[in-house]
Length: 96
Image 1 (cartoon, rainbow, N blue to C red):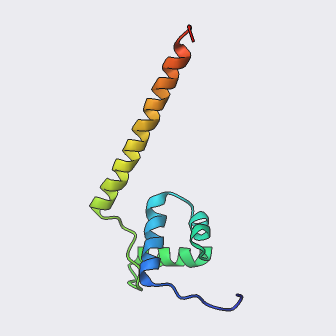
Image 2: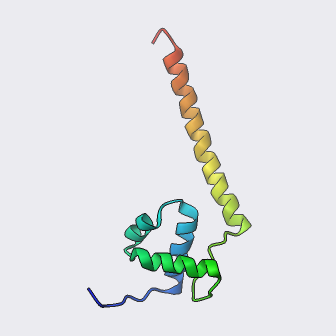
Image 3: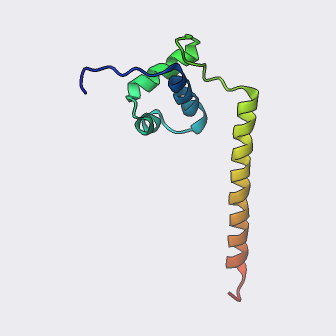
């Protein structure tokens, strides 16, 4: 496949950039998961940040997207906290 260029839709590029902005994963990992060259994904991300408008939606999150992300993170953290509380109570009990 050396020398051939793949074409990606604007939607694919936008979703890839959004995933990069919201997932917290490194560029290399997301590129691998999507089957995209790491440099290509990095380029899309840079264009989005610059507001290039080359078919890529800027990675600035809307307020609603950020709220959804924070709610998910908050729910996950509460779940982890509850698990740790239960583990602490279990190990603190001398009669187990």
